[in-house]
Figure 1 (tube, helix red, strand yellow):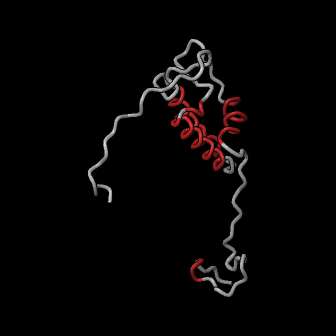
Figure 2 (spheres, helix red, strand yellow):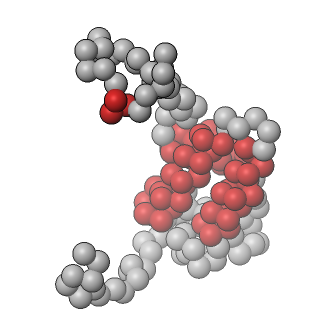
Figure 3 (tube, one colour):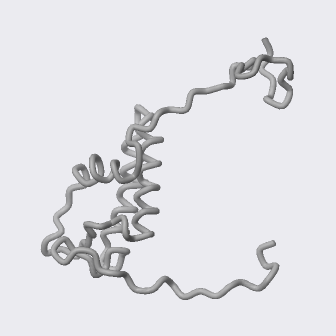
Length: 138
């Protein structure tokens, strides 16, 4: 059988069949969502002292849009790289966990003002922006 691009498949093939054998099973997620990833993997694994340091963490990390985005990116990268047996986890730590966690825990990061004792503190306003001229990005 020839491997044909999907647009060249026989339209008479039974519904749900994969005549070229291209249907690949998507890997199942290990963690169902970013919250479970943070609670069950990241927090227990990424151990850092917060006392007497410049590192800042918020117990209610999910109240910070930047933190949600960065942690979601960390989780998705972990889910992908965990399947790479040779260097996947090393790449994840070096290219994803270390830079994102450094940004999250930075004194002027998204958790500025928060703390394990004082809890969540509202963050200052978003960066000021103005709309681009009409048609610039068309």
